[in-house]
Image: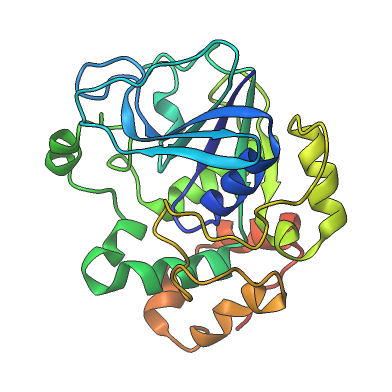
Length: 262
């Protein structure tokens, strides 16, 4: 099995990925995967291996290295801040049995993003990252330079909602809002993702990769409604509110059942 998990930074993607992989029997994970990473096929920023309910290898290779793959292991590829217009250019066509996207409501996602990025990199929400910096890091232009993260969030959500399709296959929803608070949703999701025996292992963990929570760092995750109310600290912040487009408001209402909170 090969699975691609699309995500925009600060959607809770690494928490979901870690929870999933701790319940799968044997899995190899590519974090920040890029097929043309410094010219090496299948290389990436970080490589993880899970087996028997444990993270048994956490390796950040040199950016010119390619990890060894085992055909008997499940492959999970994390593709972050990626413009789906580049799907064919990166030779993603037919590479994955399943494609999923992590979905977090626009207001809490933006609150976590603004808090994490701060003033210096907050502009990445509205505009792409500098191409030169991406080139130096080994990524092509499709990784965060062609559009801002707000537009990437919208693009991913349109694919999950079936309103757009640039990749030629369905995109499933990993709903972080529901995942945080609903054990039955997690159970159903786990089985749909290929887990043979649901244990919920790793649900309250903050994984060692991904930078931790914007709010609590590497402290243990609390699966409660606090996670769904981060936006309340920013509703009076004009800069935060300016990032919210009409399209984000529409998707927030139609997919997450949330009205604009101001």
